Length: 244
Image (tube, rainbow, N blue to C red):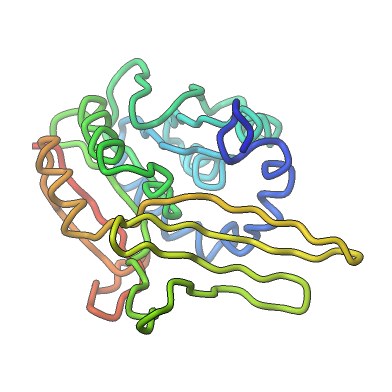
C-alpha cells in the first residue's frame, strides 16, 4: 500500500482507466449521469472517491458544479490532466471525515466505494459527514454490490470474478466479520504480480440504518442506474436517501 495515496497509488492510478475501461462506456456512465443531474438540479454535487473523474467530468459537462474528495493524489492528478478537469474542484482527504465548504443538493458514492471504508464505524461516519454537507431535502446516492454470499458453498471463502490465461481475480469473504478483499493476479512475460485491496461488505438494510442515524431516510432503491426494480436476484443496488 502507498502510505500517501492509500491503495490507489501511482502504479494503480497509471492504469486505472484502462483496467476499468468497461465502466467508462457510455451505456454505464450515461444512466448514472442522468440520475445525478436530475437530483442535483440547480445545486451543487459532491462526489466521494472522485478518482480519475469517470462520473464527475461528464456530470460537470451537464452544467452541474461538482466538488470531489479523494485520498489519492495520484488519481486526482489524472482527473486534472483530462479535458475539463480544471473545472472540477477537489479536496484531498478521507471522505468519511473530510469537510469542504458550502452545501450540496446531491452527494454520491459509486462503484462499490463505500466498501473502501473497512469498518462499520467509518461507514457510519461517512453517512454523518454527507448529511452535514447536504442541504435540507438533499440526497445521497450509493451504488454498491449486494454481498455474493449465495455463491459460497460450505467450506469455501473465495468467489472468482475474472479468469483468463494470464489474469485471475477473486474476492475473499470472512462472513464472521463482513471483511472481504479483492485480489488480482497477473502474469506478464513469465513474471507474476499480485495486488489486494481490503473492503467491508455491507447490506442494504444496514445502509438504511446508517442513513437513519445520520438524519436521512430512504427515498428510492433500484437494481441499477437504469432504475430497474431491486429484487432478491439483484447483484447490486443504487439507493437514494433524502436528508430529513
